[in-house]
Image (cartoon, rainbow, N blue to C red; front, top):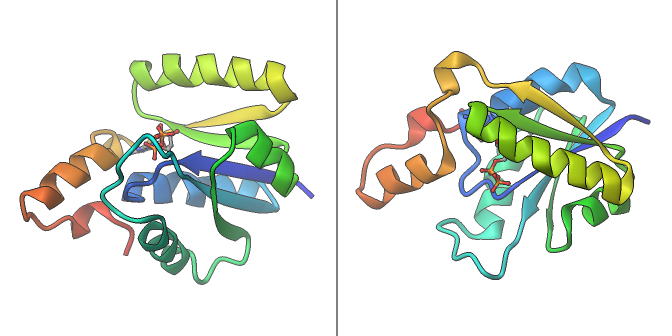
Length: 146
Ligand code: ADP
């Protein structure tokens, strides 16, 4: 069984995140989307709201599971039996950040990180942009999965 985790804050889960998971599905038997709960951060959307929205987006996809976790990401991967970690890359800034984490995580636990490049049309989309628009009362539905 080839299992990957797709970890993130997903506050909220955007169309960019959705696209990464969709494109990774042919690579894995199962993708476990892990909503990281960080006691230090004050999220806009509660863990329950984030989980609900992600489950809805993948309701017709049996290969996708959605969970929250509060541990170190590599420990979460170990718990669900994942040997791969999926991440998305929008820019060279993302790349440098992901590269450092991928190397550290590989050393810590042997987990292999798989990076997929974002589609150019989603390059500018981030959860923080969506949160900003939402807090000013703007329509955020164009940035969310259907
Ligand atoms: P984190 O807080 O761990 O960075 P995020 O929820 O911001 O979590 O993102 C999770 C993953 O999705 C990261 O690998 C991030 O680079 C990727 N990602 C975020 N937005 C996009 C996008 N628009 N296109 C592709 N990948 C993205």
